[in-house]
Length: 603
Image (tube, rainbow, N blue to C red; front, side, top):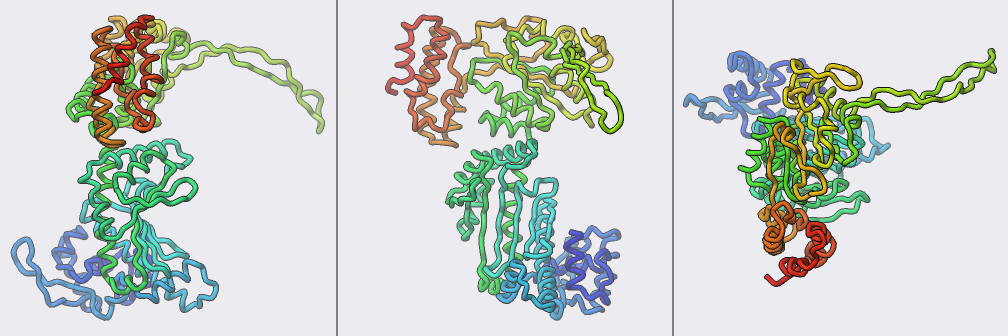
């Protein structure tokens, strides 16, 4: 707010009556100006400004402003919390026009010429333009005060020089991710809620922005209802793709869903007041700004809270019940090694990524996939060949050249994925959480991959160091490193985890969840399609389990696809389900027709 207050002071405040924007006299004056026609009492000013000494500090400053003619008794009184009546103070009638964010048609025309950088602007017009910019900055103060009343801190930035505009966004948030812009030009006043695209060069920022969009789209309807209310008041929803092509939306849900599906899209919720409306609204423009902030800031906060709340992240990302999500979070807080086990397609890897993303920054999450040839040298450390070249100079003077003395292989100890992540976790400030997700953990020879880490995983901390096989360095696993392994129990071609490994991992079973199928289609396609998909999958799995076992059931993710209605269930059977079941049946193809009928037959 310092830039805004400096602009306001320089252009609108009489320095003979208020000496500096950092004084309490200025703060009191602007607090009363921000209150508009309602005015403010001494005790309200003390509460709002949190002045040391309370009213004993405020009252002398207010008296000085009354004596200088800036403030006046409104003739009204308002009841205080103690039950007494307090005088309501307002900006004096002579100073109110310059300290009120109300604009005329002429203001709009001048703003348009300033935005266009008109070379014909006289010095008088330029000075008038800066005073107009300062009065426009009063909207920024109103926005800040409204957000403070909501207990949501915001940042406000005024454009300068050029166009008359400002941007408001929540403090500690990304300005490009969710913001409100207010602009004035010759076509009127424009209020726009912006949701920026995720096309930054910063990968971590893009990931957070995409996660934010997903959480926005997953918020309950009652939370996003204010957007629909604004639409009824004449606001417009638009989506811009990567080429700048605009698409109008009439549904809040469809708009948020389109933003979540494609990070290159940007969205806007906007309303324009033409110059005649701007003049008619007068100080009501400031009320419009306050109202839209009251509507949209809580939506921003709710999406951010969902990003930070691991329970909500699992509920929204996996469509789980809250009890199941809370159980997993509680398990993760008790244990640093987790094993997600179940049939393919039951959301194990997705759950691991969402859980890790809810508890740690994306830069502190690493995913590896084990396979039969994965070894200790890949995971912990090993000797690796390095091509080493050396050169020597020939001759001297300005014609000195270089000639290769040959190249040879040198063997050096190189850290593996796990060792590097442990080093990062040990040096992280504040013991920030780190996650290693091991997909298909049972496909590797785990005793061969882990070696002495079997001890280090069970007994953590610097008091339980082990000596590494190649470097002979002391090594321990810190408490701020979580390891999540996923295991397909249907995979009979590889060994399952032995007892020693299972003791070191807390296992969570993932089974087919038909409710997730229904919930996903309710949100993304249709409730009827979700009900049918769940029913067909359930009937198929009852046959599969009877023929084989629960570990070879078909996971619900096979039916979670946006094009299901377009391609049909037969295409899903032919392309996805039949190949999996053929593998499970080990050549017993006589059972396939019955399974096909169970999935595709009439319901």
